[in-house]
Every structure is written in structure tokens, then in C-alpha cells.
Length: 447
Ligand SMILES: O=C(O)[C@H]1O[C@H](OP(=O)(O)OP(=O)(O)OC[C@H]2O[C@@H](n3ccc(=O)[nH]c3=O)[C@H](O)[C@@H]2O)[C@H](O)[C@@H](O)[C@H]1O
Image (cartoon, rainbow, N blue to C red; front, side, top):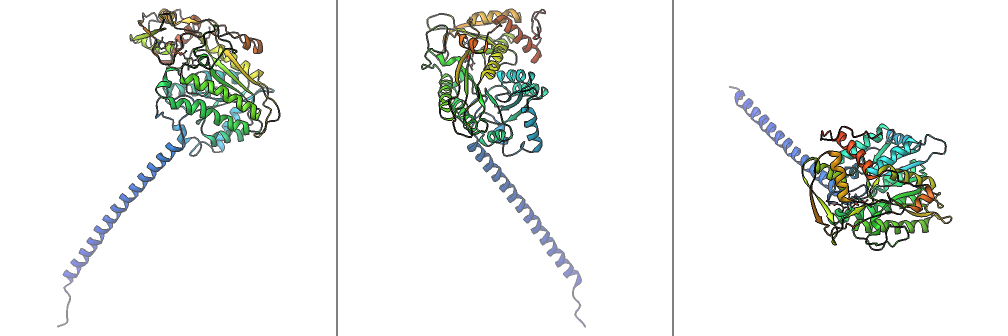
């Protein structure tokens, strides 16, 4: 009898082998998926680590040591530098009036930056914004300002002052005639919490910008924001540009004073035209939520107590509060009278203009009076705590002498604190959609 294989057994064996193969394949697949997942995770972690090391914080403000600036991550390497992006950069920077300027505004989504950009655009200059949108204060306010700029055909590049490739790229694309440099880590008292952010923005970031500007062809003229705080413990009153500025009371002030010295160096070596503007406590619509008039308004409306500082000898703390429209006029005046830089491509060809001006209101007001005006406008009584000024970098008073700015570009502040705060409150209640007991007769911003 011929051997007849047990077919049923061999089929079972084959089935079993096929089962084993399937099981092995599945295991292999699972193992390779795990491996792939781990490798992806590792690459992602390495990328995060790499960018944390290579893109330091800076420009336009900062909240704490881990300030959130997604722009640093995405600005130059990952997106936004294609042909369409370049077209937006060019269009935004192109003047629309004969002999108009082509201006790079740093900190364009900031308070003063937004107002200046709009004013310059309105008269036909080409304006390109730069901002890192960090989280020193609510970034959604910066985004809202960006939208406002965008509605006025101003494009804002999202990048940090320390992003050298991006700055080089912008200067490669556009022959800027001017830079209005307003990006900075602001705030006097916050410097005790996060000193490094002041170094990153106000010193490293400023130097980075100057390095790129000095190498540019043509070199732009630069107008930039210094601060009234450079007068520090100066006792002369009112503060004149001739007064001593070697006694800063805060690190913020020290970095702004350092900026003035750095400006001198770049003017001296490279022939950059540089104008520093010492702003005196600027306030107004679209303002900074970290400033006293702004958070007093918020706290008064919410029924929260506010601290009103008095000096150590018991006198009232006072500021030369300056309305933003007056500051804008000062910035535009400084730009209009800025002479061309004399260097080119990093080489000086002759002496260049170097200036510093006070831009204040020439009329200091006590913080108590500021609060009374707000109480009147909001129709709410504030819960006031008068306390001795903590040792946090504040100075007892500021008072600008603006003779020099008046002589050179007819600077003349015209808005008193009550008028300016009325415009601010009008904006505040509309922007935040609050329905306070604001008096019905509060005039609109346009009035
Ligand atoms: O001119 C400048 O160069 C600076 O102006 C601004 O600094 P300051 O003049 O200090 O404004 P701001 O904080 O609004 O305090 C206003 C007043 O309220 C007092 N103040 C403050 C807080 C508080 O709780 N109580 C209080 O009385 C406080 O003592 C002060 O007297 C900018 O923030 C800064 O970035 C820089 O540009």
C-alpha cells in the first residue's frame, strides 16, 4: 500500500506555521512601531533642546525666565520666508509718497510701536514691523495690535532682535532708510524678578540690531527708545539732557543708559546716525497692562485695593505722564530730522549725527491725583492703600525739560493727564467690553 500522507495533519502543521508567522509579523510590526515612536520622541526632544540653547529670549518684553516666544522657534528657520512672505515684506516697506521713508519698526506690536507705525503709514511711509510677541504681558493684546496694523497694510514679521539671520534677511530684501527701534524689555520693577531678560533685549538685542545695521548698504538712520529712568537719583529739576545720568536706580535704567553708551560707540566707529529718545511714563489707548494707570483701572473696576506709593520722606510720588500721541509726534520729528548715516557696509566715511532728547509732558502729576482722575472717569471709588515705596527701582519723581526737542523738531506736548486718561478709559471699556459705571458723557477717542 502506497504511503498516503496524513493530509489532515500536514494542513494543520501548515496552518500552525502560518499562524506563527503572523504572530511574529505582528510582533515585529509592534516592535518597529515602538522604535519609530521612540526615535521620533528623541528627535523632538533634541530639537526643543537645540532651539532653547540657540534662540535666547529678547526684544519686546518678557514675563519670566521662561518667557514664551514661539517666534524664536519659528522665525527664520521653519516658515514664513518664502516668495509670498518676501512680497509682503517688500510691499509693507515700500513708501507711498514721494521721498517717503522705508522704516523698520521694532516692537511694532508694542504700545508705542503700534501708534508710531500707524502714524508713519498714514502719511505714506513704508513700514515693516518686527516683534517677538513674548508673554511679558498678555500676548493677545499684542495680537490685537498686530491685527490693527495689518488692517492698515502694515506687515509684522514675528522674530526676535537676537535672530541675526532674520535681521540680515530683512536688510537684504529692503534698503531701509530708517529704523525706529522700540522693542525692549520694559518695566522698572520687573527688573528685580527677571534681570536676564533686560540684558537679552536691551543690551544683546540692541547690539545685534546695530551690528546688522552697521553692515547694511545703505546704513539706516536709527531712532530708538531710551528712558526717563536714566536720570535715576538725579536731584536737578526739571531733568535736562545735560544732567548726570550715572546713578540709575534700577537695572532697567542701567540697561537703557548702557544703550546710550553703546549708541555712542556705533556712531563713533561705524558712522551710524543715532537718536535716543528718553520717554517719560507714556500712557494712552492700547497701553501696557503692566503700567500703574492700566492695572489701577482694572483693579478699581474689579473692586480690588490698589497701592499708592509715597516716598521715604513721606512726600507723594509723581510722574511726568506723557500721552502717547505726543510721544508719536516726537518720534516722527526725530525721524524727520535724523541725518543719514555716513558709513556703508561696516565702514565709516565721516562723522555722523548722535543725539539724545527728552520726550515728556513737562508737567508732573502725583499718583494720588492720577487715581482721583480715574475714579472720576470710572465713577467708582478706589480702595486706596497709601504705602511707602518699596525699594524696587522706582524713583520719587520725574519731570522733563523738553527745550532741546522743541528747538530741533518743534516737539510740544499738548495733552494733559485728565484728557489723555479719558481717551484711555474710553478705549479700555470698549476693548475689554466692560460695562462699568462710566459716565455717559465720556467723549470718544476721536474727539
Ligand atoms: O519713563 C520711563 O522711562 C518708564 O516709565 C514707566 O515706568 P514708571 O514711571 O515707573 O510707570 P508705572 O509703572 O506706570 O508707575 C507710575 C507711577 O505709579 C507708581 N506706582 C506704581 C505701582 C503701584 O502699585 N503703585 C504706585 O504708586 C510708581 O511709583 C510711579 O510713580 C514704564 O513702565 C517704564 O517702562 C519706563 O518706560
